[in-house]
Length: 117
Image (cartoon, rainbow, N blue to C red; front, side):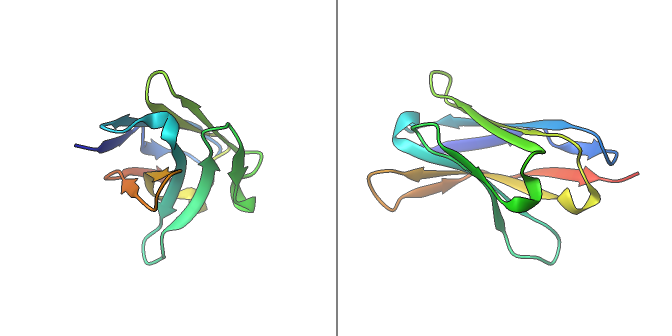
């Protein structure tokens, strides 16, 4: 059974930092490209950052220089270090795993990030 479990969300003031964690089980982690998405209230889910199995990362312009994605294949974990958080970063953040061999994707249940003073 495939599971992606996000953690690390919470309430933080503007300018603060959080680190999100995605723990994967039931998949061969190295065979998946991983990504973080987010969905703000009333908006569509959007890609935030992707990290391939080969270690190539990309980010949407809005978070470049503020967010850093990383993965630990030995531990089946992915991380998103978020710094200088802004109120517009408020959203539910989701972990996504996309197989490099097929169109199979998996989603976590999400973790809420709220940036507010």
